[in-house]
Image (cartoon, rainbow, N blue to C red; front, side):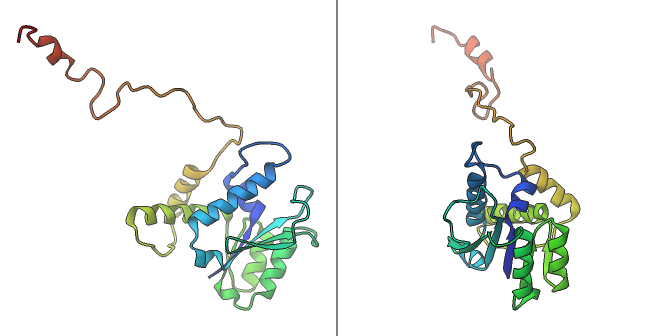
Length: 199
């Protein structure tokens, strides 16, 4: 099944951010998203995946409007008003829209997909499904088909994998060995105290 992803919409919806701020922030965020797709989609799926980004002032200089990266097709909407316009054109030109999934929470794009009988799915929901499928695959060792989840399951995975605050710091306080291992601190100390030193 072919896949079109509204790149910045997915980035913003699930809170994927660059590891640093500044002029390379968007570039880092795009790289993080593409790395996520490489880690979670098979090469066969990536070959049918198109990711579309707006080509604003932060787009890489000199980058072609269309590139192939690790089997995925990446578009920068350089000659369009915005990424939405290019995505609508890609949907219109798809020869088998019933086999197309469009990932975006943008209602304009979802309407364009549904007009052609393609599947339209919110970015958060798609992200949660992909994460769940990856976890199940890692635990079972068997690739399972993507299945619909209940709203409660979707909410759980969104909360589990979404960064609520891009400024949130990771707790890097030192880890101690206290309580390490299968027994609680102080376990069996009473036995050591009762030992006869003469034995």
